[in-house]
Length: 247
Image (cartoon, rainbow, N blue to C red; front, side, top):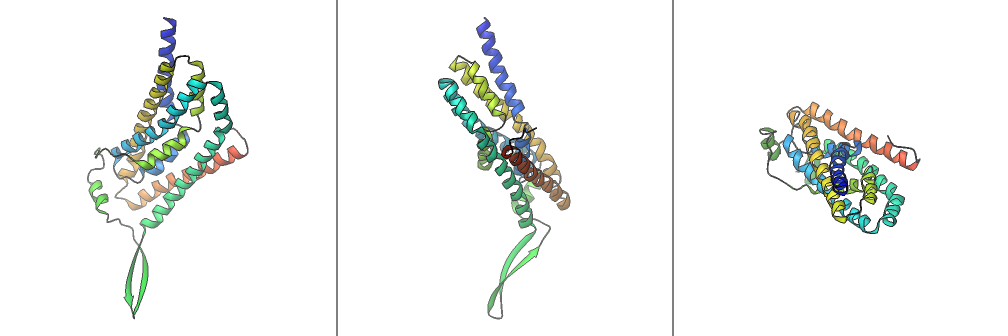
């Protein structure tokens, strides 16, 4: 009876850790730079699910190996975990810079024409988007849309998967004797992460969806997301390289 209670507690803990894990600051900041690309609030759901699947995949693989080999693999992972965290820092900076680039690109358009026997390129500023898909989404910013796998979100999730507080979840595997219980713990951690991140991405999508017809407001929200990603990435990198504790 005590064994069954312990197994149930471990499985429930995995789910709760998954719910909490998705709320890590670096996760939220990274995904905020992705959801800005969609002008539909509920399409953030597919971003969150794709991120959660990418986040869960490497953890299940590594977690299964830890269940079999126990301390040896866990010790090796702890020795190299800071490299994964450094990768997250670099990714956050790049995601933030991509926001700036996309904003710059969206306000410029280029065309060429012939003049006096030579071809010329002209760059013009614009404050409007005439993309058909944008126009279509503006009329239904709260519809769920067609379920779509987001490869970019999946890759971001994979990079996040082996960094940060995931180490705490993996360390708890050392206390689980049953492989079946351990795998269930891992799977429910993934389910909790996917569920939590799906809710977060829907919430993050709302400001971008509501501001889609207001160029300045939308640009401001995007700049906040991009700046936050760059600044947090720099802070994370500084903390890792100087071996300071990260809040």
